[in-house]
Image 1 (cartoon, rainbow, N blue to C red):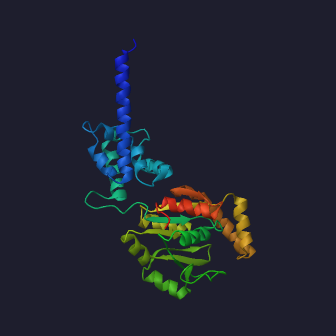
Image 2 (image 1 turned 90 degrees about the vertical axis):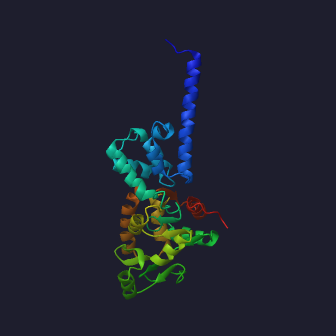
Length: 298
């Protein structure tokens, strides 16, 4: 038998109301009005919107996680994509709460402001330095971190602006004194590192910081600052990447081959990043990175 028309209308209205209630919960998480862990703790008969919210929607509402990381987190937590918060088993709830505590802090300890730290990484010759330079010039609200390196300057590079150029002895001393947030040997040749103090100071002041570093460094930053957004800069195509590397003429043939081999490894790791930006045009790519930082142009 078909249900009476009045029942169908009432059921439809109830479903719409439930969807709107869940959407409001997600909005509150995304805006920072509520912590996701509070939603988990309140889920129950008295709060049906929280209870019927899918765990994947809950995690996906946390600012700047993105669908790729959300899917990976769900897999790590061993929670089905269809599982709802109110239907979590005891062990699943414990794992989810532990993750949320690490991610967002507790009501008694405010989390770091999402988006204050952005890491820009990508393969060799993709144009990371050019995009970062454009941001430095046109978006003064962004603090662009200056790395230290043991490689010699290239034409047009400026000490203290492009890099801090140091010798091996000085770099060793900085490592020994724990002055780096991250450091790595790149292309089996020179070392690069991000000085720790300027980054921590800027973040504590509520400023937005952009790190232009390599894949190894990005992984280290993710460990130190889980709330950092990782942006992977992609070339329009592999052929264009090769053209850019050859065209800049700063490496001999052996070095180019070594860098291209590394680039293939780096490209294979792009799914580790929260966002992808294709550098077809420097201005457009820079604007996309800045938008991810939620920084308005001065």
